[in-house]
Image (tube, rainbow, N blue to C red):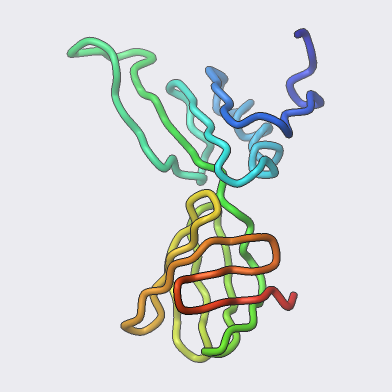
Length: 146
């Protein structure tokens, strides 16, 4: 298929492999972040700026100095916003796969990998699966209100 990289429909992709300059990766990044949570993106050598990879490996023969770094990103679910929980309002700020915010008055820090969210509030760890406007954990539920 011959197409314009910036207008091609990537919505059905589950894996995207790239060997593009960082400037092109950065231009493509908004489109990649709109893909379905869990979509894997692999790049050789060139990163995506402040979106740090979930995994990074040096590959190739010992002493490899060029084109030797493989990076993997997993598209995170979009969780930024306000959620209602039995424990109080969960307010999440999201920067790619990293999250911060508050649960009630407690600060939270955590991460999102694909549709899985994990965060700590006080001494309690929460984990769950994001399903649209609902996050379900083993003993908690949050519903998006914003």
